[in-house]
Image (cartoon, rainbow, N blue to C red):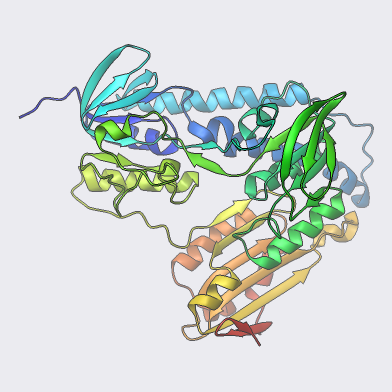
Length: 461
């Protein structure tokens, strides 16, 4: 019997990697985990967590304005970018410490080094100049921003990674992209007083979301003063006399202090030695896995964004727990990637779960669409003109609610609870039997009794 240094070696200290290592170690396995940057991964260090903190910071100017309608008088206000960065850094350091503490308490060995595969059971620890062996290996190295290699002047641009650590708050920014990262940062920077332009090559922002929410958010952002240029793309970025000159295909030259590329994320698989170990990737560099997250090499698994299945932190954690069940509990378990609730922390916020209207029309022959658009109660005294949009998508034959979509305050919180509802297979009749909580915005979800319209074979009638 071959003796290995470890039962499990995990490459990557993000959400999926840490969960795999910690739980396996707690089961009594000899585990090591290697991370070349900081523990916590994209989400904790340079993604979801600092982003949400920035979202909160960017909302205060509207809170101050809204307070007048409720009788408050707020004096002169000011914003200090450096204080926000320092507070964010302190919180990220605290969270990283908790991740490491959890690993240490489970007796996992924590290695601060880049790790690369030598073969199916051997890992090179680059910082230490040595190799170790493991019976099972998990690759959870996440994703990395697309740096737009074909763009002249791309070296003058930043990505979301650098946006969290700018030394100064810019006066103006051009953000390239139309996905959730681009949209969220456009709202963040605008909320902090930055002149913000969003450039997107598509016809409408957030291409994978329901069309009503996409259009509603576009209108709300434009009304706030964010400039959105669709059907356009960058030709080049160059240094000017005072900042950067951004040449676009259809809107001439834009001036900006900062240009941020938010055009998607790529699997972080380059240079990991995958070829040497026989691990196959697709044309985009994503590690190919089966239904159980196993790669083309039986003892090597891959989890999270490096597989490019669903790029969400909770998905990576779920895949890690399925790996534990499969590998160490004799309970082969497939990750369930259906009906995943998610949120876009734009302003207003989006919460969504299940099928969009368009996708439901392709899957079901008869679809009922329940739609409500209204001014939220808070806006009646604050004077805000933003509207909330709520939609339920129902398969008419089974009466199951197959999609739920919300634009407005606390949409993400509602989406989490709707995720349980849709996952359980609840029907529209279940919604109708549920008593409303009044006065709330969420009560609209259980008081839309008649469909707004139907889709027959994908066509609205």
